[in-house]
Structure formats: structure tokens, C-alpha cells
Picture 1 (cartoon, one colour):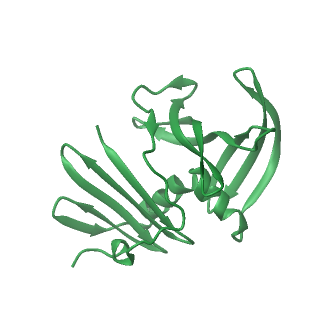
Picture 2 (cartoon, helix red, strand yellow):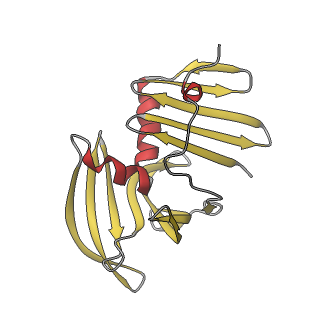
Length: 180
């Protein structure tokens, strides 16, 4: 099993570390620049890779909500619908070339699901991230569990749980610089 650590420093620094049996890998973006690190080597990210990493982070509720004040952020009501038997409000969001649909609980305003076009196993289709196990972290209701479906079918093994969430923690700025 892989363990991921995601770090976002606003407005435009993102880092994702993955620890697995095969070792450690990292992707980091600082503004328009970025790098990938794997084993003992690193290389500069192409612009498309850096944009992809930013989109991955923008699909996270906390990052998306923080981005709502950025220039170019657009969110519009997209009607109502159901998730199982629960009535939800739908909101469509656009930012930095990314589009996603949020499914909001009208009572709590929690983002229960995020839907977007994405790639799974080489195929492009509709990905839905269902979020649950909401816990209070510094006054914010954060989902600590999520699972994915692709074109309406659950993705086996996509379940993830968070061990911890830190908000406004101290981050060593050197983690966004390539090794020397």
C-alpha cells in the first residue's frame, strides 16, 4: 500500500509525496515551475505535468474553497439532484482550465462529492469522489474518508483515509526546491 502526503501552501505551491514498497517519489510545483523526484534522481516537470498536479490539488475541497477568492474562479448553481436518497445542491466550478461539479449537502454545506472528467487506467471518463467521515479541524469540517467511481462504477482499492490534517502549519520552503 502507498502512503501519500499532500502539502499545499497558498497561492501556488503544491507537493505530493508517495511512499510505497518501491521507494519514495515526489512531485512539487512552485508557481509555473515544478520537479519530480524518484529514488536518487530528479527532473523538471513539463508545463502540462505541473498543470495536472495543480488540478489534482484543486479537486480537494479545502484547496478549492481557499481558491474561491482567486481571479478567474467561477461557481454557479447547477440545480439539485440526489446522492442515493439524499437531496443535494449541485454547483459547477471553473478555475485555471479545470471544471468540476460539487454536490453539497443543503443543510450542512459540506461537499459530499466532487465530479470531474479524469483519466483512470488510461481511459477518460467521469470520476466521482465521494467524501465522508467529516471531522472538525480548527473550525472546519474536513472529510477524512473518500472513495472513487469511474463512469458510475466503484474503483476497487480507491478508498482512502486521512490520518491527519494540519491547517496553517509551518512548512519548510526548501521542499519546493529541487535537490542540489
